Length: 339
Image 1 (cartoon, rainbow, N blue to C red):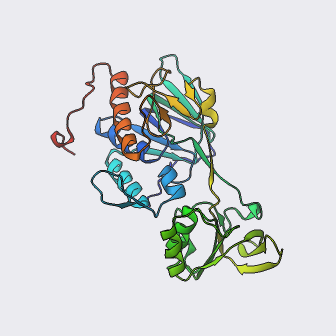
Image 2: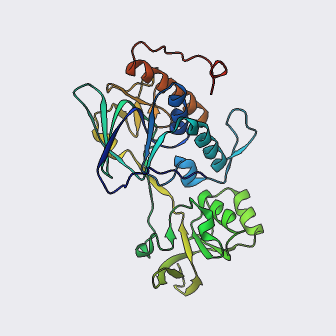
Image 3: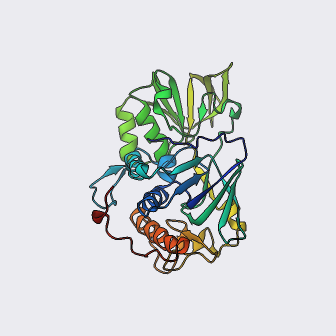
């Protein structure tokens, strides 16, 4: 899966201008990046997660998706890769690992967004495509000091786990997806879950079992150990309290995510629970601020990826007319354009 980051040092304050700033790098946001480029607009994409793809990358990268137009089935990571490749000719600027914390408007009426990493983006328009809000991984109670030294919450690059003993913690789709994906390249894969019941689809569980992955249930990770890097994981049975040491060069904690609108709650947006109210133009109540995808709400809203694609196109086309009042709302068909 493509992993694009902003080339600027994230620890330094920096600022730049762009026509469209998209907040959220999930499917709707990535399609919005393509569409902004198609309209001849410069575009930047900001996301708090360290990789592109939003909820797909975080929760079900290996799962087949069946409701994308034109595909009988498409794997989550392949859909994200395709969306990234579609936008690539227009050179979107990605700011990954950046949480959008503040929205103001300049003297010229243009939105100004500041991130927690010191980035200040001045945009002609903002399109919020943050899914159901900011995803924060549920922390593994034991061994947080090994984060980045063997303990991970995402698998952006499977190759770093090659020839390692990998312990995957969790019982949902993402845990079983990671286990299945890493099994062919890791020295060993062990899946640990606190109960004997799994949230993952039965077919995913059966696939992991068929690969010979050891599945340990009714246990939790009680301690991680190692010197400079993770070397072992201690697991403890929840009832008997007996412990067992597993070799572990990597631990992937797939314990789910907490979703929250976070700082967006304080921007003055018209909110309904964890959603943003928009009109038929995908415009919010704030000037030059639009929204698309699962984060939006309006009468008759249907939360599907395919719907989010259409909303992103609607938002960007309407943003284009705000940025340039002489621009046409309808950009023409893509078949009429030269790429």
